[in-house]
Amino acid sequence: MDTENLKIQIKTFFGLEEILAGEIKKLGGRNVEIKNRAVNCEGDLGFLYKINYSARTALKILIPVYEFKAFNQQQFYNKLFQFAWEDYLDVDQTFAIDATVNSETFKHSQFVTLKMKDAIVDYFQEKFKKRPNIETRSPDIKFHLHIDRELVTISMDSSGDALFKRGYRKEQGEAPINEVLASGMLQLAGWDGKGNFLDPMCGSGTLLIEAAMIALDLPAQIFRKRFAFQNWNNYDADLFAKIKEVRIGRIKEFTGKIVGYDIDARMLNAARTNIEAAEMEDVIEVRKQNFFESKKDLFPLLMVFNPPYDERISINDEDFYKKVGDTFKTHYPNTLAWLISSDLEAVKKIGLRPSRKIKLFNGKLETRFLQYEMYEGTKKLHKAEGKEL
Image 1 (cartoon, rainbow, N blue to C red):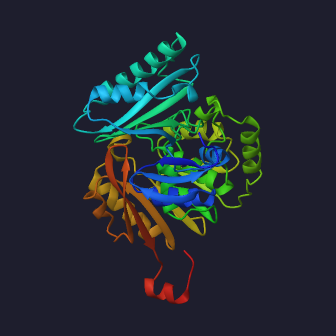
Image 2: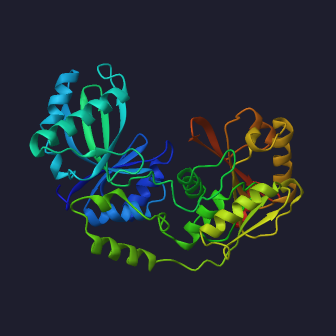
Image 3: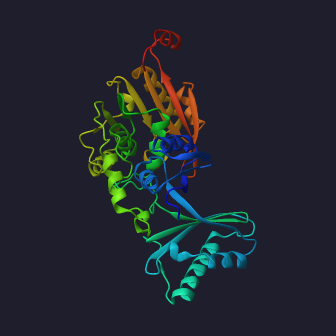
């Protein structure tokens, strides 16, 4: 593995590719190229450690190590059996494979995964008279198999557990928002830690914690204990320690407020548990408050939230979204508000025209991330006066 010029593929969610590309450029990635749900770039080993530790919208970070074409199963096995696996996996290490397959020839990802496992085990058995073990829960080495028609790409997964697993979530609600999606939404909404932030339906607190991490410039994986690259034969512990030290040295002071409301006491308890696990009690305030009975008390203010739908609080959609719109209009002047929803008909009841609509996926649910601008008086007047939201 050429550790100076690694080709790197970083997976993300649909709609967050531009945000991720911006993060990668900022962290020093070379030849950054946006793909569907992914960003490709180049960098050295230190950069690989840095993006694993710091990138907020990365799901997993892969290093392609072997590429070939296979037109049938035997060819697939033979090509894999010829590869020098000992360069990437020690016989005493455990390994696992995850796969994404888009091919007429290889239809079942489970089958090709088993074939690849066989090829690796047979290779070691023949060469070393000993075989590595498979461990799906927490393997030492994780391979990623990608098949697109006849093209097979084998990559090393440098992250291990998916990077949305930040390590602070101890409690979750019925419909929690993924940490990577939460951070992406905040960055799309323009949150940079300047001013104040409100999540008026905060659930178990993911948006609040991610907002605080951005405001303080905390590395996304500050709570993570382990990365897969730490089991690689080229792992440089001193280099990783230095990268962490430099990154932690950049943590900023935050003078604004980050506040969460919810009407569900159980959810507020879950949020407090998670906030404590993230060591954010001094930065985030949560309180039992019905958003529809609240008034704006923070200036300037950015609001981002994930309405609870029916998973958490039984709501009459029409009435619910109408109340959201009424609260925006009457109690939150000069505010930028964003919400995510999969019910594209119901959100029309808000009664305001969204100034931006961004297509995102919350799990398998197709959603829109909608921006509403509330002005006191007319929009034109405010633009003319250049008033800040």
